[in-house]
Image (tube, rainbow, N blue to C red):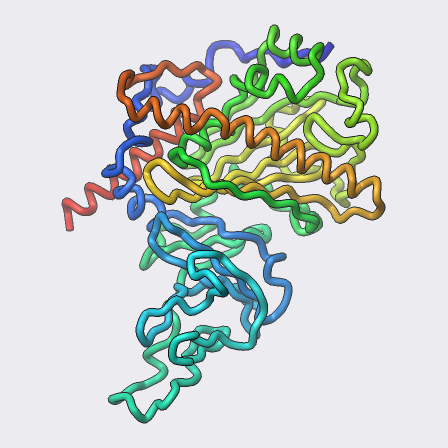
Amino acid sequence: MPRWPKPPEGSWTEHYPELGTAPMPYEDSISPEYFELERKAIFGRAWLNVGRVEQLPRTGSYFTKEIQAAKTSVIIVRDTGGEVRAFHNICRHRGNKLVWNDLPREETSGMCRQFTCKYHGWRYGLDGQLNFVQQEGEFFDLDKQDYGLVPVHCDVWSGFIFINLAAEPEQTLHDFLGPMITNLDGYPFEKMTERWCYRSEVGANWKLYMDAFQEFYHAAVLHGSQSPAKFSAAAQQAGFEAPHYRLEGPHRLVSTSGVITWELPGDMRKPMEDITRSGLFGPWDEPDLGMEKMPVGLNPAGCDPWGLDSFQLWPNFTILIWSGGWYLTYHYWPTSYNTHIFEGNLYFVPSTNARERVAREMAAATFKEYGLQDASTLEATQSMLESRAVTAFPLCDQEILCRHLHKVAADWVEDHRRNLAGA
């Protein structure tokens, strides 16, 4: 029978008195006016992860990212010097979207030597410089040096590509991430290039889905059907309490112990898990990651067995590192006050045989099901929050990260309001 770790003495929340313990309002998740403030206060100022360097394998590789919360589209490209650059996806002539395929609101990717506008044929180099103007002599005092693509601040940490849409970022990427995140340096993200992706349009505020993935109070109930009945019954009776929470600046961490699935009694595993050697949190066979020791930022609670660390990077990016030698990312891209795009990506060391491939596919299907179960409550939550029949809700100690997320959002919005008032 699995034993869940006991909670620490006292509570986690009491160590962060600025969060308080009062019931929480959710007006920030149901107000169109508040969302309009979030656009500039948060998504116009924070460092945003838009992908990984493996998506740009060679010179001229590019992809686009639609950031509706900031009302823009961005091109991310590897230039001739190997540098990763970012530009607003707009032609300097008449404002046409520069890079798109059949549908201009859909993201795209590919490889090219230059970017050519579909409208009038202006051409831009991989460095953003304007190289060619159709019938240039028809223009008045046009200097091509003045009409390059509009750059976006771009930086890379551990292979993760971040952009910042502010005219001038308030912090470097390294300072923005802080030690809790940068202490993951040395983890071999770059070795995990086998990727499984899923994407969904969700009818709920972006913060509500983040809340669903940053507490495990719901796990034994909402995800009970993911495990055999005997295991689920035991989990529901015991509940689940994570052994470690941490807040640092705008970011959050929850770390959990694990379960050695293949050591559980046979009636506490699913037959398909035995067949594929995968399930209840990933493939059973761990790859050789070539690490002598883990980075200091992993498993801060010293769990044995360790399960996962879930790093919630402000504002809308999550990295979950699993003890089995793989990792998972989530993105939450707002499209309105009560809708957003959810993206999930699973990353593995490339399979070397059919069994490994099937195990990864099993893990991908399992986590898609977890995501669907979490998402199943969101539209119901959104609709009833918007009724305002109840305006404040009690949160338990395990929901400390939810309190923190909404407080950080409120702090950034209030800071933005102060800046507007002082302008």
